[in-house]
Length: 110
Length: 119
Image (cartoon, rainbow over all chains, first blue to last red):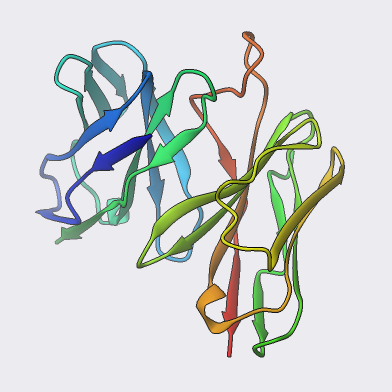
Protein backbone atom coordinates (compact mmCIF):
# COMPACT_ATOMS: atom_id res chain seq x y z
CA UNK A 1 0.00 0.00 0.00
CA UNK A 2 0.87 3.63 -0.05
CA UNK A 3 0.62 6.60 2.29
CA UNK A 4 1.65 10.15 1.58
CA UNK A 5 2.00 12.95 4.11
CA UNK A 6 1.87 16.63 3.33
CA UNK A 7 1.11 19.72 5.45
CA UNK A 8 -2.55 20.67 5.60
CA UNK A 9 -1.97 24.37 5.07
CA UNK A 10 0.75 26.78 4.02
CA UNK A 11 0.52 30.56 3.86
CA UNK A 12 2.78 32.99 2.02
CA UNK A 13 2.79 36.49 0.60
CA UNK A 14 2.57 37.52 -3.00
CA UNK A 15 5.94 37.45 -4.75
CA UNK A 16 7.48 35.05 -2.26
CA UNK A 17 8.73 31.49 -2.72
CA UNK A 18 6.98 28.58 -1.02
CA UNK A 19 7.83 24.90 -0.73
CA UNK A 20 5.22 22.19 -0.17
CA UNK A 21 6.69 18.95 1.12
CA UNK A 22 5.50 15.42 0.60
CA UNK A 23 6.83 12.30 2.28
CA UNK A 24 5.71 8.90 1.21
CA UNK A 25 5.75 5.30 2.27
CA UNK A 26 5.02 3.04 -0.59
CA UNK A 27 5.98 -0.35 -1.84
CA UNK A 28 7.33 -0.48 -5.35
CA UNK A 29 7.48 3.30 -5.62
CA UNK A 30 7.73 4.46 -9.21
CA UNK A 31 7.24 8.23 -9.26
CA UNK A 32 5.60 11.29 -7.72
CA UNK A 33 3.08 13.59 -9.37
CA UNK A 34 1.74 16.96 -8.28
CA UNK A 35 -1.72 18.35 -8.95
CA UNK A 36 -3.32 21.74 -8.35
CA UNK A 37 -6.97 22.17 -7.46
CA UNK A 38 -8.74 25.50 -7.10
CA UNK A 39 -11.86 25.73 -4.96
CA UNK A 40 -14.77 24.25 -6.86
CA UNK A 41 -12.51 23.00 -9.63
CA UNK A 42 -10.94 19.76 -10.73
CA UNK A 43 -7.39 18.59 -10.02
CA UNK A 44 -5.05 19.54 -12.83
CA UNK A 45 -1.66 18.00 -13.43
CA UNK A 46 1.45 20.07 -12.67
CA UNK A 47 4.47 17.80 -12.78
CA UNK A 48 5.87 14.29 -12.46
CA UNK A 49 9.20 13.06 -11.13
CA UNK A 50 10.45 9.56 -11.73
CA UNK A 51 14.11 10.32 -11.16
CA UNK A 52 15.88 12.10 -8.33
CA UNK A 53 16.39 15.79 -8.83
CA UNK A 54 14.59 18.93 -9.78
CA UNK A 55 12.14 19.37 -12.65
CA UNK A 56 11.39 22.95 -13.58
CA UNK A 57 8.31 24.20 -15.40
CA UNK A 58 8.07 27.96 -15.38
CA UNK A 59 7.42 29.26 -11.88
CA UNK A 60 6.84 25.76 -10.56
CA UNK A 61 9.49 23.16 -9.83
CA UNK A 62 9.23 19.70 -8.35
CA UNK A 63 11.92 17.73 -6.58
CA UNK A 64 12.28 14.07 -5.69
CA UNK A 65 14.68 12.18 -3.46
CA UNK A 66 13.97 8.47 -3.67
CA UNK A 67 16.51 7.63 -0.97
CA UNK A 68 14.70 9.93 1.47
CA UNK A 69 11.18 9.03 0.25
CA UNK A 70 10.59 12.73 -0.05
CA UNK A 71 9.57 15.27 -2.61
CA UNK A 72 8.49 18.86 -2.77
CA UNK A 73 6.78 21.36 -4.98
CA UNK A 74 8.41 24.77 -5.19
CA UNK A 75 6.39 27.76 -6.28
CA UNK A 76 8.25 30.96 -7.09
CA UNK A 77 7.04 34.53 -7.62
CA UNK A 78 3.78 33.67 -5.94
CA UNK A 79 0.62 35.19 -7.34
CA UNK A 80 -2.82 35.45 -5.79
CA UNK A 81 -4.11 32.96 -8.35
CA UNK A 82 -1.76 30.34 -6.89
CA UNK A 83 -4.06 30.08 -3.88
CA UNK A 84 -5.32 26.52 -4.23
CA UNK A 85 -4.88 23.01 -2.89
CA UNK A 86 -1.84 21.06 -4.01
CA UNK A 87 -1.78 17.28 -3.98
CA UNK A 88 1.14 14.93 -4.25
CA UNK A 89 0.35 11.53 -5.74
CA UNK A 90 2.56 8.49 -5.52
CA UNK A 91 2.68 5.95 -8.31
CA UNK A 92 3.64 2.35 -7.64
CA UNK A 93 5.04 -0.02 -10.20
CA UNK A 94 2.64 -2.75 -11.17
CA UNK A 95 -0.68 -0.98 -11.34
CA UNK A 96 0.75 2.50 -12.04
CA UNK A 97 -2.34 3.94 -10.41
CA UNK A 98 -1.62 7.06 -8.33
CA UNK A 99 -2.50 7.35 -4.67
CA UNK A 100 -3.21 10.93 -3.63
CA UNK A 101 -2.13 12.68 -0.46
CA UNK A 102 -4.66 14.70 1.55
CA UNK A 103 -3.59 17.94 -0.08
CA UNK A 104 -2.03 21.20 1.10
CA UNK A 105 -4.07 24.37 1.06
CA UNK A 106 -1.88 27.25 -0.07
CA UNK A 107 -3.09 30.71 0.90
CA UNK A 108 -1.36 33.62 -0.79
CA UNK A 109 -1.75 36.99 0.90
CA UNK A 110 -1.24 40.36 -0.81
CA UNK B 1 -10.79 17.95 -27.56
CA UNK B 2 -13.38 19.03 -25.00
CA UNK B 3 -11.69 17.18 -22.17
CA UNK B 4 -13.43 14.81 -19.80
CA UNK B 5 -17.14 15.58 -19.61
CA UNK B 6 -19.28 14.85 -16.58
CA UNK B 7 -22.96 15.27 -15.95
CA UNK B 8 -24.77 16.48 -14.05
CA UNK B 9 -22.54 19.12 -12.48
CA UNK B 10 -24.75 19.31 -9.42
CA UNK B 11 -27.22 16.82 -8.06
CA UNK B 12 -29.43 17.20 -5.03
CA UNK B 13 -31.52 14.23 -4.07
CA UNK B 14 -33.26 12.70 -1.13
CA UNK B 15 -32.07 9.73 0.85
CA UNK B 16 -33.14 6.48 -0.72
CA UNK B 17 -33.24 7.76 -4.27
CA UNK B 18 -31.16 6.36 -7.09
CA UNK B 19 -28.40 8.59 -8.42
CA UNK B 20 -26.62 8.14 -11.73
CA UNK B 21 -23.48 10.06 -12.58
CA UNK B 22 -22.17 10.13 -16.14
CA UNK B 23 -18.77 10.51 -17.70
CA UNK B 24 -17.37 10.82 -21.19
CA UNK B 25 -13.60 10.32 -21.25
CA UNK B 26 -11.19 11.94 -23.67
CA UNK B 27 -11.30 10.16 -27.00
CA UNK B 28 -8.50 7.64 -27.32
CA UNK B 29 -7.87 7.28 -23.61
CA UNK B 30 -7.86 3.64 -22.57
CA UNK B 31 -8.20 4.14 -18.82
CA UNK B 32 -11.10 5.66 -16.93
CA UNK B 33 -11.18 6.34 -13.20
CA UNK B 34 -13.92 7.30 -10.76
CA UNK B 35 -12.90 9.24 -7.65
CA UNK B 36 -14.78 10.61 -4.66
CA UNK B 37 -13.58 13.69 -2.80
CA UNK B 38 -14.65 14.72 0.70
CA UNK B 39 -13.07 16.87 3.37
CA UNK B 40 -12.85 13.92 5.70
CA UNK B 41 -11.33 11.34 3.37
CA UNK B 42 -9.68 13.37 0.64
CA UNK B 43 -9.54 12.04 -2.91
CA UNK B 44 -10.37 8.34 -3.02
CA UNK B 45 -10.19 6.04 -6.02
CA UNK B 46 -13.43 4.09 -6.31
CA UNK B 47 -12.91 2.03 -9.47
CA UNK B 48 -11.03 2.10 -12.72
CA UNK B 49 -11.52 0.59 -16.16
CA UNK B 50 -9.13 -0.43 -18.90
CA UNK B 51 -10.65 -0.71 -22.36
CA UNK B 52 -14.13 -0.73 -20.82
CA UNK B 53 -13.32 -3.59 -18.44
CA UNK B 54 -13.37 -2.95 -14.68
CA UNK B 55 -9.91 -3.70 -13.32
CA UNK B 56 -10.05 -2.74 -9.66
CA UNK B 57 -13.22 -1.91 -7.74
CA UNK B 58 -11.74 -2.35 -4.29
CA UNK B 59 -12.42 1.31 -3.52
CA UNK B 60 -16.16 1.02 -4.06
CA UNK B 61 -17.52 1.61 -0.57
CA UNK B 62 -20.36 -0.90 -0.62
CA UNK B 63 -22.87 -2.73 -2.76
CA UNK B 64 -24.99 0.36 -3.14
CA UNK B 65 -22.35 1.62 -5.56
CA UNK B 66 -21.97 0.22 -9.07
CA UNK B 67 -20.15 1.39 -12.17
CA UNK B 68 -20.36 0.43 -15.80
CA UNK B 69 -18.57 1.30 -18.99
CA UNK B 70 -20.66 -0.02 -21.90
CA UNK B 71 -18.37 1.54 -24.51
CA UNK B 72 -15.17 3.54 -24.85
CA UNK B 73 -16.93 6.88 -24.68
CA UNK B 74 -19.29 6.49 -21.76
CA UNK B 75 -19.30 5.40 -18.14
CA UNK B 76 -21.80 5.61 -15.31
CA UNK B 77 -21.52 5.50 -11.55
CA UNK B 78 -24.75 4.58 -9.83
CA UNK B 79 -25.71 4.82 -6.18
CA UNK B 80 -28.84 2.97 -5.15
CA UNK B 81 -30.16 3.72 -2.60
CA UNK B 82 -28.35 6.95 -1.82
CA UNK B 83 -27.55 8.04 1.73
CA UNK B 84 -26.51 11.41 3.20
CA UNK B 85 -22.97 10.13 3.78
CA UNK B 86 -22.61 9.74 0.01
CA UNK B 87 -22.60 13.52 -0.31
CA UNK B 88 -19.30 14.41 -2.00
CA UNK B 89 -17.77 15.57 -5.24
CA UNK B 90 -17.36 12.70 -7.69
CA UNK B 91 -14.67 13.03 -10.32
CA UNK B 92 -14.11 11.04 -13.44
CA UNK B 93 -10.62 11.00 -14.94
CA UNK B 94 -9.06 9.40 -17.99
CA UNK B 95 -5.57 8.71 -19.21
CA UNK B 96 -4.04 7.07 -22.26
CA UNK B 97 -2.07 3.87 -22.17
CA UNK B 98 1.67 4.15 -21.78
CA UNK B 99 4.12 2.66 -24.24
CA UNK B 100 4.71 -0.10 -21.70
CA UNK B 101 1.05 -1.04 -21.80
CA UNK B 102 -0.17 0.15 -18.45
CA UNK B 103 -1.83 3.51 -17.82
CA UNK B 104 0.15 6.64 -18.52
CA UNK B 105 1.30 7.04 -14.97
CA UNK B 106 2.35 10.63 -14.93
CA UNK B 107 -0.86 12.51 -15.71
CA UNK B 108 -4.55 11.97 -15.26
CA UNK B 109 -7.09 14.25 -16.90
CA UNK B 110 -9.96 15.08 -14.58
CA UNK B 111 -13.48 16.09 -15.45
CA UNK B 112 -15.16 19.04 -13.70
CA UNK B 113 -16.83 16.77 -11.16
CA UNK B 114 -20.38 16.21 -9.96
CA UNK B 115 -21.27 17.73 -6.62
CA UNK B 116 -23.75 15.34 -5.01
CA UNK B 117 -25.87 16.31 -2.05
CA UNK B 118 -28.08 13.68 -0.47
CA UNK B 119 -30.61 15.11 1.96
